[in-house]
Figure (cartoon, rainbow, N blue to C red):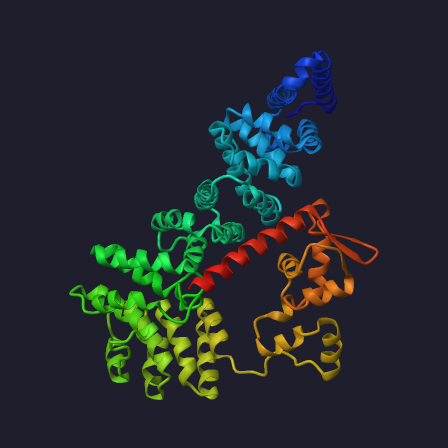
Length: 524
């Protein structure tokens, strides 16, 4: 701004001095009734004065986020938690909402429980303003998952009706959807959707309505889909109603959703939750498999094949599949190649390789790679991988490397290494041998914390044995549990680990969600 630094400092000094004089001149009875309200207004006025001195956008952000008024207001909130409600009551503009969201961000441990209580308040105006602050904080969160758990812990504990809780959680999921950066906040969505399972009767109608608001390829929808997948009985009833209503668009969408969930495109709503598709849906699927609408009939047959629904021809012959491999619809070619992969018939090898090398659609070629893996010999896989590497198609090379690579694999541990690790991990080593799921490299302090059986102090050796059952890199996970300063999950003193306030909230929310899922599995 080409202003001498001495001038800037003197102006700031005069502004701070004026603020002190105004606060000192207030009478005691006024401060008791409206102290923080007045202070908050003065803080905003000081920020406005500083903004006049700093006309560029970066300067405004720097003042709002790191100025002394922000620090003082945070100290007031941390010292007297309920007083956060006072600035919420006077936050009648977007500017003030942003200001409080900054305070919440910097006073996370103190402010989250108060913010959650305010969001659930019977005072509609206060609840709406608090929800707006929660929206603003969530999309600019700091230690997001830990803050969300502090928030959710208070929501779970609150005595308000369950429908109020559900609508608040759905609102926050919608906030992430509308933020334009759902991929960065997927862990927050996962935590929100897990807690929804604790209120299945109240959650299902809201989840169901929200589900239809999402586009079928929406990145945020998986949180809602994952929650719906556990609500088997009401989901089946709702699906049957959709199939009976005769709406082609919704019928096709529902058939698709029975086959797919995000990140696991060959896994259905139900495949991981119960054994096969619930029988109550079979009659509807058999009816749709005979529909006059060819698109719906073919998709219904796909679902019937996936679940082996009785009374429907579930497998095509290899000759029928080969004949359909030249279908002009790319999605049909993908389906046929998936079926060929499942059949693993050697006689389909040449036509699969032809699709792999010549098809114009990248998705079809990638599916062909996975199908070719099931029918080719090791020498054929190596030769195919070399040809793809020479093509220069980087995405195809990644897919092919995962599917066709034939090598020795990672270095195997010596028996001495296994015995040493076994002494530390206990039963975790055997679990690693039985399932190769990236266990060796996994670090997750929240998962490690939730593996602990109860909230109490743990000796380091005991904590290590428990964490090692769920996290391969137990040493890094253990260290991450006690780092991050005032945002850490645990405190460590003389080799003894104890829970922090955040750690207790994370543990309780995890237990609540797991208990809810267990009840739903029993019902299913």
